[in-house]
Length: 270
Image (cartoon, rainbow, N blue to C red; front, side, top):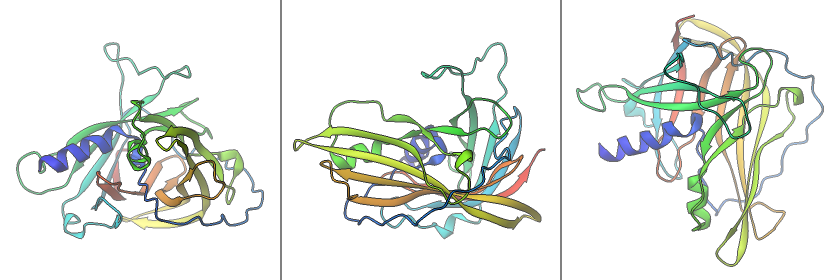
């Protein structure tokens, strides 16, 4: 139970989870050729205070397997609530200027009384230059698993803003979410590159509601010693986002220590 609570806390502090599982035994895969695409002009994640989306789903096992733990499916539930700030609680200020919005992420993973039978509550931070409209957004995410995997011993903040959309690129065009190189023991270097791509549109029916969505895939690549060939490549998250609503389905990958999440829409309050 203690291990689960620590894992949940770490995952919820990181943005949507978007886990940085790094296994340096995998091989480089070449990106599919892409063609220029019409920009996405929908608001795929309005930041409206008080909005709440509830999900059903599963925990995903930590480690290389990263598969749904089916035993959790009967009682798993998650709620995303866009926080309502008031005069006593100011939105946090981000280093690049402006402010970001807090999403209260509540997760229940057991039907029994006690810590696992109630909702574990954490906070996700999301940033948009405008609360509504066809505007890109970023989440604050932990890259600590990457640091551990490459042996980065220098104390450095593992929380980073990761850009998750590039609406101007449109469908089928890969864009950069994050790209940074670090000095590691060797001596050598390790580069973490995170990219995203809108794969296309999908119509989903969940809990009696039908949504026209954009499917977004986030992938991480690790390069060692200045090589142009990735030592590791793998998906970290997939999101299906519905215009004027936000994410209605998510697969947030686990990492070496923390649970991942599979989530499907259950209800909303708007």
